[in-house]
Length: 278
Image 1 (cartoon, rainbow, N blue to C red):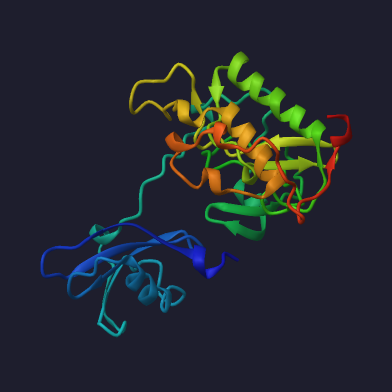
Image 2 (image 1 turned 30 degrees about the vertical axis):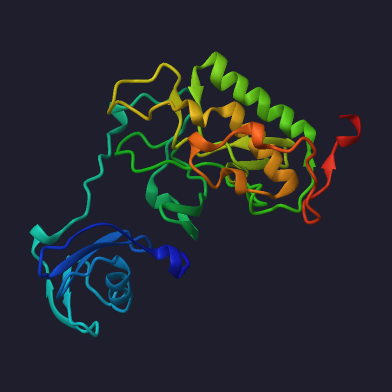
């Protein structure tokens, strides 16, 4: 299950002068949005989240808004659809999308949830069915192979091979030079190790953009200050030293020239395999 600190989130609300205030709370575990209305001008969503968390498991699915007292007791509930702040998600049909060659489809009801890893991310099992790839329905998401061992930010004590760094550089060269794509978020948290092939994997292309930047509103924008060469250099430095301070500032202020000439390995970092040949 999702830990309590990550379970609830509020993206928006309404705070009219004099109140009452309303915050729209997302429950990632139940994948629903419930609005919480309180008296006065409540400019901090944390109070609304605190009140909602007391009732989140008790509210029927057709309740879209609750009105609570200053002590958090529910005064009234609302099931009018006009109070439903849930965003509409477009689920295209299989016929409307162009799947890359080799991509198979599976029905959602054939997946078994094993664990909730975070908002919108489940660890699922798929008992292979006999009827082959799904042919009809709408696309509601995608699956990927689960890689055990954690990312390189979570598992800092593992041995890091310089061969993996060479692989990462090759991946960045292919993305940038052959396909014209910039990842724009290369960091230890977005790197996994596939032990079956002894290779590094780059994931989370949420900020990826084409180098020939599209028009505003047509995709993620390429930002030179987030270029992948800088990302690889900082990532290597952070894996060795466990010093993240140089990237805890805005991207435009991050400068590889601020790196010291000698990188001191952190005592809790894993062995750098292949370092003798460097």
